[in-house]
Length: 332
Image (spheres, rainbow, N blue to C red):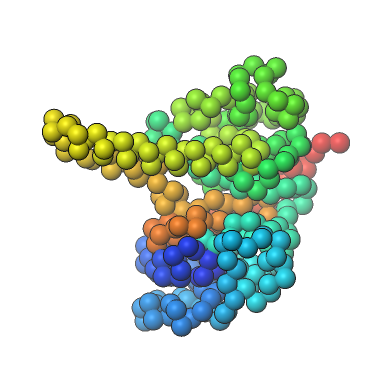
């Protein structure tokens, strides 16, 4: 069976949602796996049912790396839960890492301790976005690299295509570059130079504008981490605001209340499509082992789905394909 290491202490809400999500994943998974929870056992061990105890190991750890600490400081904190969880993967005691803790610290440790795939210059964080047709598109980078070179974005396209094909099951992924216009001449210096490199990829369909993100015109959207993170946070804010606006206007109008009752199922579906918990977490692509970075506010559903993401990653050939495709498309 595969083994997943989990930073049990990393989330904003403490270890209970993380442990509950781990147990739920074990309960719902078609394939059994082993879980290693790293953290203060006194705070969560009582939550582990006896029938699942044989699938769960605990690595005791008292030190917790806080969200407000500098990511670079984690390299000195070898006794922290995230450091120990990463080292389980580094030392092949686990096949994947799941963390809802400090994303910068997780990314730094995974890159430096687990290591990059041969040929990858910078790993990228990828996340799924819902489309208006009910599908999903993959966006990367969404925060790992705020300052990029054209070569980095070119490699992000290769990373994203591999994930879409090997993990998401898209036979022929369409890759687009996020810019401020469809024409090759549009964009800043970074996107214009990146476009020239990406033209060499069969999967590349050209530039995308912001209004194309959710229309299912592509399967993979490439941008630098600065733009990607703003896109991600803006999307989360819009989804939340729409829900609040609907509720506010319903209260103002009795007739709207009647319509809202009829539309309840539609609202529930919309909320589910825009809820990050449904996607679980964001894979860090380009490192040697599966690494899933979860939202700090992750509930047990998000953790469960992150575990499923990790399993899908482990059972795919994505890292082998990334190394092969990076070598085939090397830039001199």
